[in-house]
Image (cartoon, rainbow, N blue to C red; front, side, top):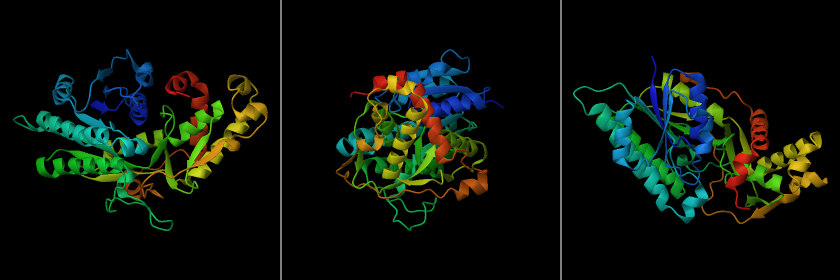
Length: 355
């Protein structure tokens, strides 16, 4: 039976990848891509879907209750997949208000509208509201601590993670109070195509290609669990198809790396690409490898950011046991796919950069 999905934040990094993945895997379903097109939302991310019969784009804010309500009704939406969020920790430190507005008020607006449409009539309509969250709501882990499970206590340490924690609690409350059919997933750090170049991996790739410094906070020892974005999409698909209503599932990559190790690996992989393909030196003359140098010379240690969590790691055993979830990509294979994409899509990332 076909579905009609409203995907919020659909022109952002993970949302766009999900829309492309779902369109390939479920061509019978209708996709309503909903995005306010703020700085990280890029309509070009959805170019190849424009004009397809089962795809529609709505340019609107999730905080606009009337627009959300009208969209749900007009398209007879039965499934919401909620990605829309302010997500850059550094921005949340310097300007937290936008994070509260989008992540908390926006999520509540969606829940309120979904409740009205799906539960406000004479009989409930079949539906699912899936909320996409982050491992950062759990706080920070010590070096030898077990990875975050779904039972881990919430201990957010930045305005970003606090706003996501609040949205998680609202989703849970709408299930337990009103009976809204919800699921939540908390994921580790994603990487892959369409990744806005303020985040670590795309920032390093684009800076190396332009010969710009690679800023590393502190001593670079902070550890993250990395998840290729298409594996995240597969995990959400499993939650939507098999996940129990009211449950939370952690989706991770089983892939812990320190920030410095990530940066150095990117340097080495791109240097190797230049050695194997001499045309790259002509395309990217600013890259150190274009002149026979090493990208590692660009590494620059900078003052650590305020409240910087030391380690995140996801325990995805629940999703594995109940849903059959397992990442397909290793970090090495996912990184090669990511490098292929950024090298092949300079016309996408170049306009997004100011330097």
